[in-house]
Length: 188
Image (cartoon, rainbow, N blue to C red; front, side, top):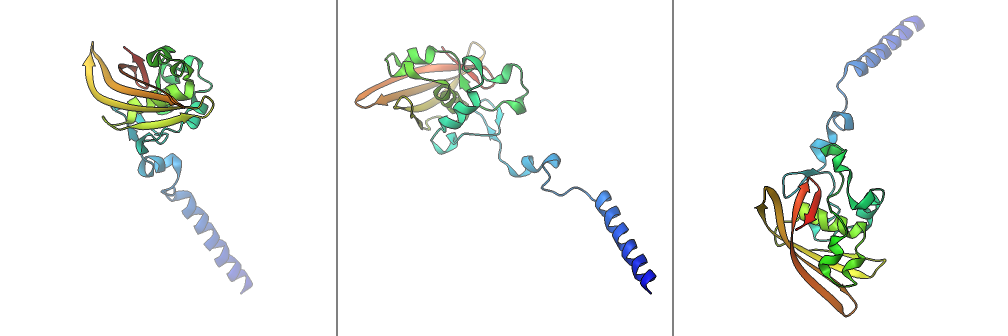
């Protein structure tokens, strides 16, 4: 009788192991598309897909998170030149010319996090959507409102209004930025 119980138990255990090996992986397994099925993709203004929006869709840019991502990149450029589309993490505005855009000491204090918020807002925000952020290190508050897009010299471009303020000092500039490559924008 004991041998029969052992035999039944052993058979049951073997059937369970074989069933586990032959069964489909669970639906929540990341290697089998869980992210694609359950995590949103943020489709940018030009059709580029982004895994993160850094709160841009809510009208507030999380510059600390963007700054941390861009912190290792030289010159504010993201790894789009050497990365695949799935590895690109954040859009950015290229170069130090953004500081000159504001034209005052306030604007020249833009850092990588601010340029990231600027570029990712151009990537994800709808025309007329205001996106704000504050640089806690400089005390400058920014507001960016991207406008309608246009094709300029074969490039996708967007108009924008960028406002910067600190204390009683305020400045506002209108301009146009064109996409150099997915995730990278340059001022024209």
